[in-house]
Length: 136
Image 1 (cartoon, rainbow, N blue to C red):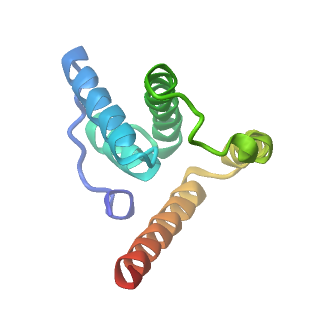
Image 2 (cartoon, rainbow, N blue to C red; image 1 turned 180 degrees about the vertical axis):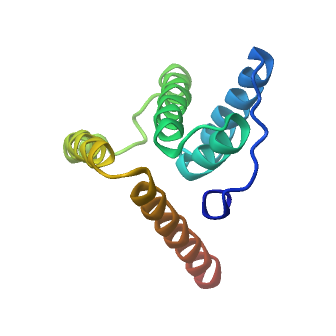
Image 3 (cartoon, rainbow, N blue to C red; image 1 turned 90 degrees about the vertical axis):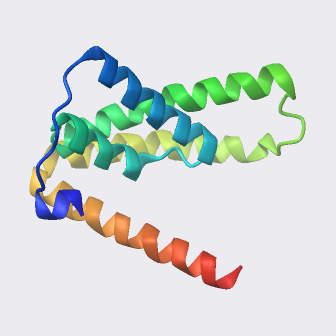
């Protein structure tokens, strides 16, 4: 909704606020185990008046470090024996290719087109969550 209606943002500037928002986003991403991309992008746009492309970059950085710390915690505490790591042989190259081509498209497409794709992705996530809620 924020990106659709171009609502006023609050433009936080102090390092304390940056730290607080980063802590919140990283904590939510690790707690929920979802990465939090759409939530991150919306909150970064709202809190810091970032354009969507910049918010996406900061979101990816936040997700990377929060998930890295979560993986390190799992490695130290319980290990990865309970996980089927064979999927990684496909997931890692697919993620690298997807990230590469997504970044290329973002560089080519206008800000307006990126916002439109973002909005449709949010709608898709809402429908998927609604479906899961109703069928489980």
